[in-house]
Length: 118
Image 1 (cartoon, helix red, strand yellow):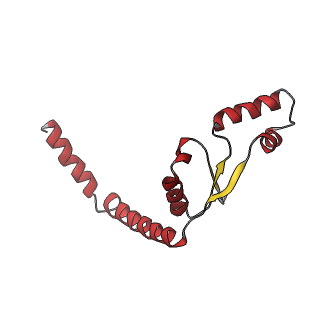
Image 2 (tube, rainbow, N blue to C red):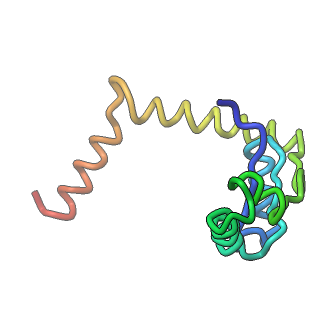
Image 3 (tube, one colour):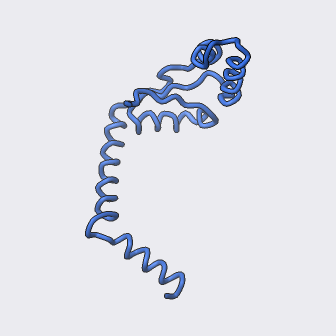
């Protein structure tokens, strides 16, 4: 299933720099919930459904919840830069962590020998 949007809740919402970074790295809009107490609101929605106030969770969430759609939108230039960095990370990971180049395994053995003396 393709991901088209991320909805963020919790304390990290207070860090605007981090939210913009997430939008840029993921290259997709971030929406934020309107409540500062997301878990409590979720519990209240489920309780309201259980009490019969709403026929299902989707209806309860529509009535009681809400989101600021697209609160953070990705900067295309920064998103391209993060894509380039991630491509390099993957190349390095594959080079050092797979196939015939077992340098990471050798480095771990050296560390193990230094720590244990064996």
